[in-house]
Image (cartoon, rainbow, N blue to C red; front, side, top):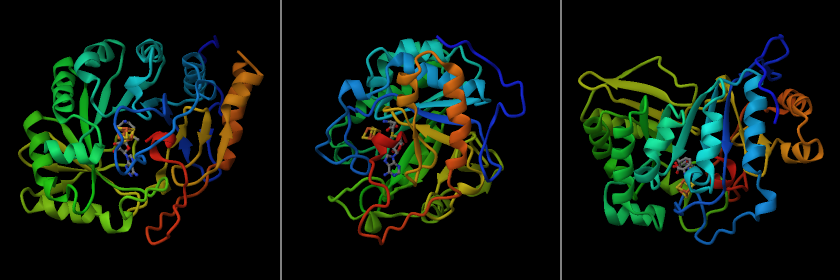
Length: 338
Ligand code: SAM
Ligand code: SF4
């Protein structure tokens, strides 16, 4: 195991060619999932064989190397991170590192895991929830069970996380009419909610992403018919911009990869479960960390230098074009680590 090091030299932080400091990683712990959301996966997905997936120990080493380079926030994602066998042990280890540990989950495992996660040191949770109607929820996730997720939200609230945020991808003709109801649900529960514009990751043939596209500005207008929103300067180190309502603690966020490009102050990178370090969500620039880990087992310095060098590859920005017939990025969101 590599010894934890804190950054102590000027070069011991991750800075790209555009002067952006990277202090946030999204670490995918599995490409597998118990749902098949229509915007994220195709109906018949094949998943990676075990030998191509980083072991729990390798995932820990990657996180540890990043923290030694000044990364202060780790988000576990996937696929569905909580379906990976043994993940709670990894989370306990990560909880000991000097970084804020947060998870993005579809909520299905929270009824049984929420308390353990809190005890393991997870500070905040993002829970994906696109609809409050059984049939629609099933249609959007293909196999998900709404009651299980709602029970998961309640279990998370009971477990006392510092902040809980719902994430809803809004699609025209699918769930756009539920925006006010989702806001009311978040207000009732005293939690935050972010609305996400669907991104063209992976080749999905069942719906037309351009037709389903609902911009953050449209979503905001829907909400403003019920509540007046005040923009805040609050950030959570992620891409959301936040608004507040006068009579509630719940914040409303917008993640707008199309309409309000967030690349200028991008502070994050992703690591896929194959150990591919992705420098940008919407580009293919990457470095194979698995090769480094397996060619130099236990060599923390080699891994750290690889991460420092990789910063030169981080592109300035992404471009998403919904009119393009081919997706610019072939990998699906579950392979990317959302
Ligand atoms: N399974 C977990 C979940 O659903 O929260 C974590 C992984 S999921 C890939 C992370 C987030 O990405 C979810 O909030 C999901 O709604 C979002 N997402 C997936 N595919 C997307 C797409 N094509 N465009 C925008 N958001 C997407
Ligand atoms: Fe699974 Fe999350 Fe993708 Fe839905 S969005 S299929 S829950 S990984």
